[in-house]
Length: 474
Image (cartoon, rainbow, N blue to C red; front, side, top):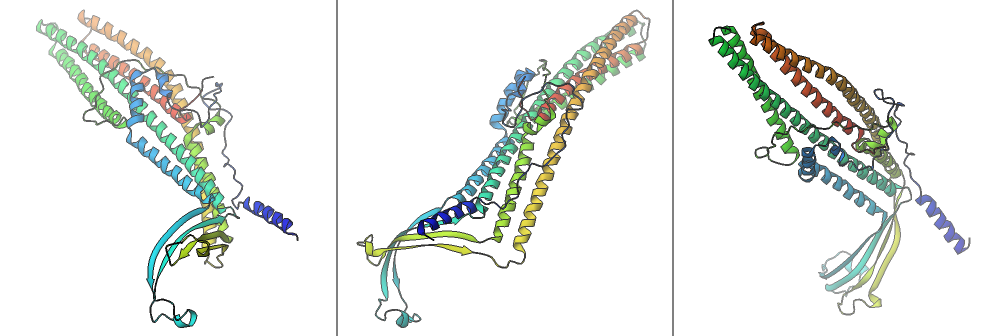
């Protein structure tokens, strides 16, 4: 075969082998996806994707306190900083693995003085008997090592590293979304507690007036001591509820402090009775959830990484070929070191093939396949749980909306009953027991209404989180 034809054949063969990969063909694990959500029909199709910006979704609640605290969370939260550092580690490892695609080139230089032993074995047989006992050695050189990736070991390692870095990016986005949702939830709970505290304080004021009225009537011989005791009991009970609610607020405030990176000992939020808006959240078709959620993207990328590592494990059955090259100058005299007679070089491939390993490579391949199966199962679990979370949040929103309508009617009726009872008590038509019962019923109904509205807002936050955070209005 002519030399040019041989060169072309070698180049073509190298190109074909260089494109080899022993990893199985990757396919995203299949998960059953419904045509529509159970709780929403019809729906407004959204246009979500994993790459959508997720920051700023809380602006839809039109609550300035939440906006301010989310900014502090992004700047100061320790868990978020740790998640970012974890992603940076994964990205650095990706670049480290990618370096295997390129040759390693190094330079070295040394200057030394050596002395041979007088009784060195075979000194007079293999070497010159008159060779000096002591001599100088000056060397300047360079070396190159490059693995010829015929079986795709390096390329599959790079694929796995890239997929792991993308998975880490998804982990970071998931951590950020989770913390944002946690802060939003805590701030909404805090707002609800402020409203309950305000209601209890108003109720305590009304109960104090009722107690004073009862005591005046008792002093005038119109009301019994039992009525006074009942009024005092109602007032004390309301004060106890106020203290319990204030304690809950303090605990929630401490949780907010940790989320925004402040000390709970010095952090304080004043009472804020501003109404929190309930946003309209475009749910979209079920299939888009697979693109929205960063944890789904992360789980899918880890499955791809595990699949690529199967190729890495399989490549161990084939020889590892490395191209080594060295060159430089060496002389016993420093002067004129870089002259042509002092030049040396070496070039050639090295070949390494394991013939027996006691089942090590087989176990490695089986472990890589099992890891792929594990990653695929985890991906399916994440997807199914994601759909369940969306359905849960939608069910809660729908149920809370109906419950709030009924509870509002109950609160209005209870207040009307209380007004009528108090008026009739003043007229002497009913006993104070009717007033006490009406007071407790009205207070309970109003607190339940505040609690339901808070729970509805919290459910909307969980829906945003379940959908992956970002969306585009259509």
